Image (cartoon, rainbow, N blue to C red; front, side):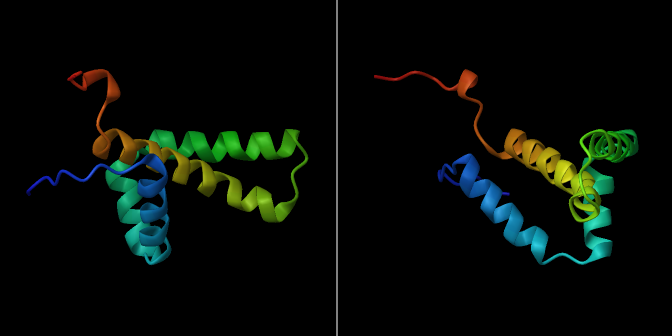
Length: 94
């Protein structure tokens, strides 16, 4: 796979991810989750989101979406780590 010299901002990566994510079916989403997030992490997000929603008295529509929103945030972070250059490892040239 050839790497291009195009540098994307986190916002650009996030919007591209959201567009791709919206086009995935349930089976494809499950496959992506299995390949990128350990089962223990998925269970943690679900448990934490449910506990947080209960303690914050969040209504049902938002409560049902909270675990998924947390997973999407985590996936964006994983994607960012894989695709975006690490600013700490960038050479300084003048």
